[in-house]
Image (cartoon, rainbow, N blue to C red; front, side, top):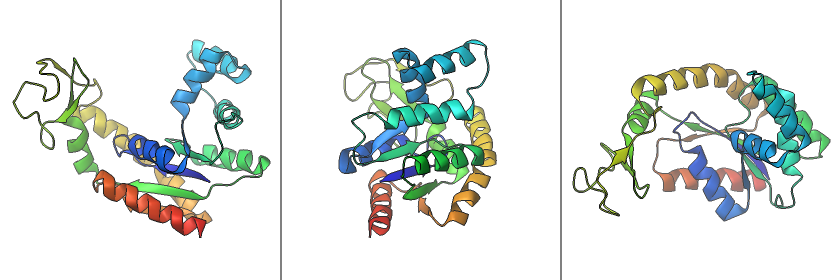
Length: 218
């Protein structure tokens, strides 16, 4: 089974992709991770990607698709995959369809994790992490029990990701919404788009995705 998780940065796609891998054996495929791995391994596609990036250019869709195809040839892909953050444009979606068809495969479901932009800004911009042990916190939703002290290790130094600020989050959401609106329409027209509430808690989102998988299996 091959599925796509659609959703803006911070929607929880990575978390759900890991759960799908644990529960259903669907390997999480993130193009960023695959790109780095292909370059590190020195594969033909990886060398091509590195040459493009060294010139300061964006990696083209055909190279991205080549990396995806190369990764899907690996022996650990048995039950299927979850595409996390890919495709990003209708052109990539069409290229993915052709690549899967060439492998006599298809997309079983495209799951859009629908979120409220304002709530997502609040969710992301309040995150911080213990610098010592990596425990994650949130100013509003999951603060440390004692302000300034990590619950887990007692550390007193905390960090924030540079892009976990309101302006950056809003900019990323604007780009995502602009890119993804036609992508949502593309898959809706094909009849394999399923929309779930991405603002629910992790357990409920996992359950909703599970219900979609049961539906497409049946």
